[in-house]
Structures are given as structure tokens and as C-alpha cells.
Image 1 (cartoon, rainbow, N blue to C red):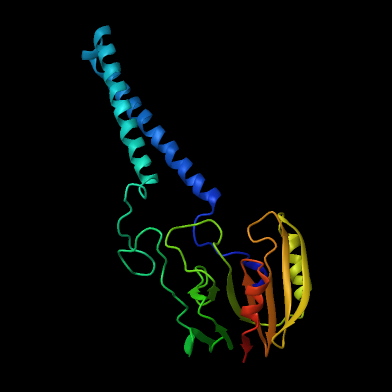
Image 2: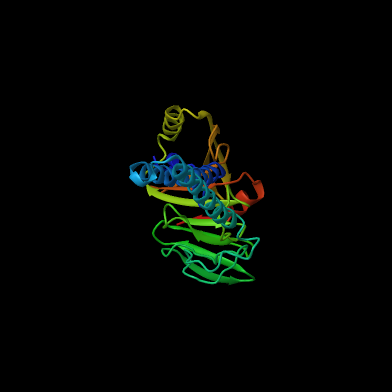
Length: 264
């Protein structure tokens, strides 16, 4: 079931993947000079003109000098790459927004899905309508609209502007909306089956709440994985299942969003 399968949306490298990437870069940076020295040494052994001891010493010294130069060059490159923000580097990049010239520390403009319609209600408030999914949600001026990175038709509502640079986790609260055809007749069995199938899922909690005259199932998984404990609110109407997955557990944010949802 779709409402149980996607626990989190990744917008950038998580910290553990970031450090693994840097470790891999460092490994190859160290390995590269040794490969050069190996092939140069092999070439010297095959050269009959380097058969005397003095020549071999001179060749070895030359190899070590080249090795040190390569280490300095490669090490300097990675040092500047990791510290480029402090040295004013980074330059202009071709970002997903299609804009150029955005500097470090700035944020991306709003980028809601193409399938939603937005109506200005005044005072910074907006009415977001998904005619295909069949729901409306009113958002205030302190909320921002984006599309999900994995499912680009899914609306994302968050209380922070999307940073240009990568980050681990989220710097605020966000909710990913989802919709599919179906019903919730077997939601308890499906939720239990999903948790049982994951070795890192320890338990789950399923209860019901009512917000803005809409009855919601609230699913929470506990365990050792990203997104554990975050609530997913699920409801159904007219053969459609609506899922709002919150990447935070802020009561005011959750009630503010769900309290303005209207199912058509």
C-alpha cells in the first residue's frame, strides 16, 4: 500500500552518505599517486639504461619528488573544494530551479506541482486545489509550496524556504501530500505487515482523530530509521485515499495544515 511504503523524502545527502562520499574521494586521492609511482617504477625496471645503482637511486628520488607533488596538488584541490565557501568559491551553478547566479545561503523559489491550482485569498493566504486528487488546502503567508523530489505530482507544504545547499534532515516542518485510488478497509493489517517486513521497525501505533470534520487514521512507526516517530495522517473519501506525511511532530503545524484541508 502506498501510504505505508514511503517513509521519507530525500532532498540531499544524509550526513552518513555525505561523509562516505568524502571518505571515498580521500581514498582515491591517496591511491592515485601510488598508482603513478608503481607504473613509473615498472617502467624504470624495464629500461636497461637504468641498471646501475646510482641511476636507480636517482630514479627513486625523482619518483618520490613526483609523488609529493601529486599529493600536494590533489590534497590542495580537495582542501579548496571543501572550504570553497570561505574563500568565496562556488560560483554560479545550474540549479533545479533553472536559475543562475544564486549564492550560497540563499533559498530556492517556490515550485509547486504543475497539477495544482493556486488562488490568492489576500493577506498572504492562498487556496491550493488539486483537481485530480480532489482536495483543497488553505495555506498562510508563513508556508511555502514545493513539489516532492520523488513524486513530482505530490504537493509539499513547509514552514521554511528550501535551502539551495544540501542539508541532513529538515530545518523545519514539512508535509508531503499523497493520493491514490482505494480504501482503508485493511489499514491495520497493512500497517502491521509493513512493520513486520522491516528489520529496523520495532513497533507501530495506529489511532484515529477528527480534524475539521474529517476522520483521520494516524500511523507512527518506531525503530532505527530516518522518519521513525513522524506521523502519517490518512483518510478516505469516495474511493480515494489521502495521505499527509509530516516530517516533524509539531502539533500546531499539523493541526494548522489538516485543519484547512477540504476533501471534494
